[in-house]
Amino acid sequence: MSLENGRDLFRGVLILVFVGIASWINLTIGLILLALMGVMILQSVITNWCPADLFLRRMGMKRRLTSELEQNS
Image (cartoon, rainbow, N blue to C red; front, side, top):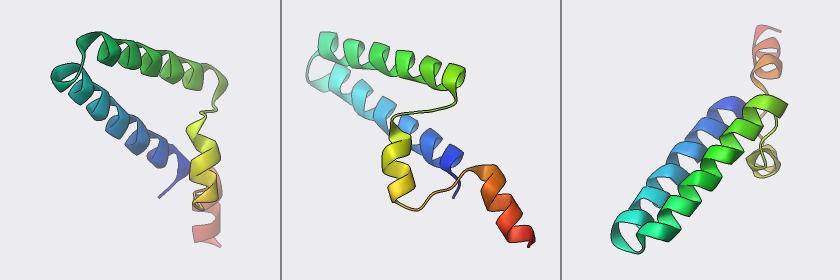
């Protein structure tokens, strides 16, 4: 799995967790967390870096370009 796919997986899980918080625990907190997630996604698109990268790289995930070049070698 590439770093980009890991980011998408991480985002999807967080969004589902935040929707669950909004539904079952507290609507205000859930909406604040969802808004924060939206800001983080926008920041990631602009800078091509996500704070989750720190965690995902430690798990051994690499950028897609690097992964594809290694497979072709």
